[in-house]
Structures are given as C-alpha cells and as structure tokens.
Length: 425
Ligand SMILES: [Zn+2]
Picture (cartoon, rainbow, N blue to C red):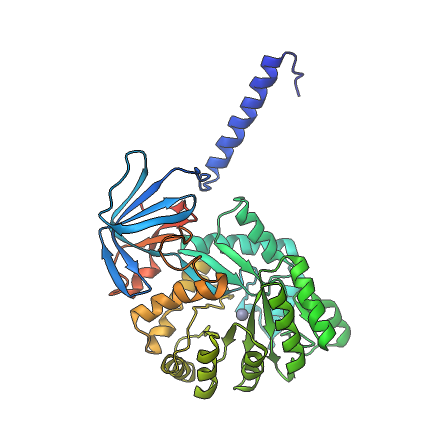
C-alpha cells in the first residue's frame, strides 16, 4: 500500500474507502439501510385487513423507523415523504412460516433405506455448508413473501443462529428468524436405530438427547446459551418418548427465560396430551388428534401447526375437527426436501393447498398464514398484521387474495421492517 503523507491525503483515502464500500454494498442487491425519521408512504389499490377478513380500498400506509405509523383510506401524503406507488396492487402482511428447516435439505434420491438421508446429511455436510444451504433458502423465502419464520432445528449445530444474525446485520437477505437451535429429543433423536458408537458421534450434531429431568433443564440452558429464541422438543420418535417429568422441566426452564416451546408430537393423542399438560405453546404435526384433545388445546390457547401434505384424508379430517373446536391454526410448511423445479420459497407457499382441501376458507387461510403464527412466534402486536405499531412487513400481490387465494403464490413486492427487499417493477 502507498504511504500517506499529509492529512488531506489521509482524509481523501478514507473517503475513497467509504465510497468503495458504499458502492459494493449497493451492488450486492441488498436493501438500502433505513433512513431513520424519514416517512415512507405506501399507496395501494387495497389493503387486506386479515383480522376482519375485509378489504380496505385505496389504502395508504405510513411507515416510520421500520414500523407502521398509520393505516387508512385516502390519507393525506406529506410533501417530504418517500412514496411507494402500488396503486394497482393488493397489499397484505408479510407471510409467516411457523415451522421451517432452512438449513436442512432432503434429497429423496439418496434415500435407500428408511432414515438414511438425514443420517447422510448429518455425516457428510458440515456446519458451514448447512449454513450456506440456509442462506440460499432464506433468500428464496423472502423473495416469496416470507418476512418471518420460526426455524425449528435440523440445522446442524447452531447454523440457524448464524443465519439469523447475518440477516439481522444485513449481510444477507432473508426473513426475520426465530431460531430454536438443536431440537431436544429422546435418545437417538429422529434417526433410525444405529450402532451405539455411531449414535454417540452423530446425534449431537443434530439433536440434544435427554434422559432425566436434570438433562432436560441443562438442554434448555444450553439452547439459551447458544442463542435460541424458542425451544423445539421432539416428544416422541419411533419407540422412544420424553416423559411427563422431562417435558415439565423443559417448559418450566423455557418459560423462566421467556421462550416459547414447540412440540413435535405424532402417533395419536398420547404425546400431545403430555406436551399440552406440560404447557407448550404449539403442537407440531398432531396428524390424528381427537376432538377432545383439540378442545383442550383451544381452551389453553395451544396452537396447531399442521405441516400437512395434500391428499391425506385423515389429516384433512383433523383440520376440520380443529376448526370445529376453534383451535388457532398457524401455517407451518415443515419443508425440507429438494425440489428440482422450484426453490424453497415457491414450494413452501404452495403448501396452503392442503388447507383448501381440508375446507378452510380464504380468510382462515390468510389468518393462518399471517396473524396466528405472528402471535404464536413473536407475541402480540409485532408481526402478522398491518396495524399501527406492527413491524412494516408488507407484501403486494396482483389479485385480491380474499377472492383469489392463489394470488399469494406470486408476491411481487416485499418490504421487511420498512426496507424494500423486492420491488414490483
Ligand atoms: Zn419439522
């Protein structure tokens, strides 16, 4: 490097460095940094009021410091505001997926024996590459309109935390991530049975195994230390299950740290009942829950995150029972397989088809895709609605999704926390 002699040269050098980095930053296609105190006004053909299932025509949204300041019809626009013109588009809250695995990619062609693929992935893909898989999926998710996700494990050792932090620092584009770190599981995690020495080497790369109340408490503390925003538990797998005392201890420790708990529970009512009794916040999958258990969930405010595939009659029946019992349904894709033709965001958004097949109407689908997971993941008043005080997570579509729900499969504009990530033109 050339030596700098006078003060003027030093100043010029640093100015050039600043100009260089500014230029590089913009050429990466990143969203420009938000300008504090500068009002942005979005004008839209209409806004979807998801809470009430209504359309607000000629909507105007004031965005200030990343949050929604005001929403209304034909509001006056201050002369110094930055105006975003979406007057031929419908705006709605950013989509939310309550059950993602951004750093997990399942390639069916590799699966020769049951459970082999996740074993192969864990054995041969290191944390750095798990994180890079997540970087790609995070970008594809936000481009499809997902502004918040809850990432529930199968992300190696804390790759989810690395991606969350990189997005928060604006290094890479992606949704706001609520990350669980490794899932807490019975011995063996979710792998098929394997020789014990192999299990001891592999399972901790993906799960924290628990046997006993003290291990349960320690595992939650480890997750907190690792940076978790929420806790994921595998209540049951194959012949193994966490017991009531272990579940109670997990939820108690999590609640002390103000973390919510998501419980993977399948195989009838038993595992879900234990999890609900322990005080978890959501049941993931719960494919065949009875009406009695669903009514208990509604009473206690426990959400169902269905993660359904289309065309499975018994899954559809349990959605119908859940709706009849007034259980809040939070959209969760549980998407992790590699699709040759579509990216992760495109595959994820298409999974609402299973909700239509189960008899949900468009308002119910939109609420499950925004408002309900918003409260489940982030608490009241943060994400999932376009109302005063909420984060300005706003997407736009070409058609009215109250009438044409398929409009959500083609998101043309994305704003996250007041920053434009994808533009309509
Ligand atoms: Zn899952």
